[in-house]
Image 1: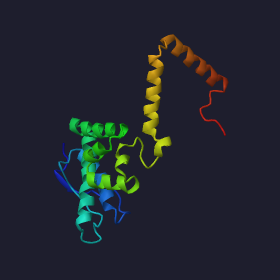
Image 2: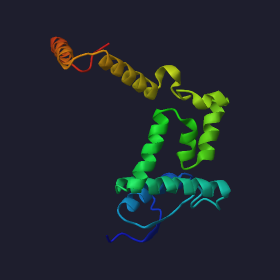
Image 3: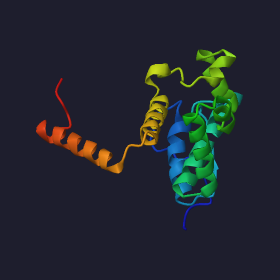
Amino acid sequence: HEAPFYTLGPLTTDIAPGYDHITSAIGAAMIGWFGTAMLCYVTPKEHLGLPDRQDVKDGVITYKIAAHAADLAKGHPAARLHDDALSRARFEFRWEDQFNLGLDPETARKYHDETLPKEAHKTAHFCSMCGPKFCSMKISQDIRRDAQAQNDAGGSLAEAEAGMAAMSEKFRAGGSVVEVKV
């Protein structure tokens, strides 16, 4: 495919000293998508100093992300299965599976436990970012549950269509405006 076999980087921008591992991972994802077979990681200290153990870990993990993104872009089935498995674990609040399916389980677990340290928090149906009231995944689960309950209650297709028609009429009566000034 006329892609190079191996590259270091490439940096997509030069404005991020200390973050070259990120800007180069963007380039690595792109060249991986276009067929480069081997990606060589860059550390945060690229062009600044000699990397230490943590710098190497950060560079390698960043490049694992880039390689995975490239595999997804190429339609690699195993990459999609891995991604979907972690997405399902997130949606179902299976915290241990989220940690273990991730590229760096140790760091994921550490970050989670910094905010939600108790063992009971690993079964919580929310995360520390949105909390129990504003979690989009919890809200989606509640909507699915409520919709299923309505469907199980015997609502007919005709009733659903009548309800949609009524809401459409209400929308038109309101001027068919999506954005409403408050």
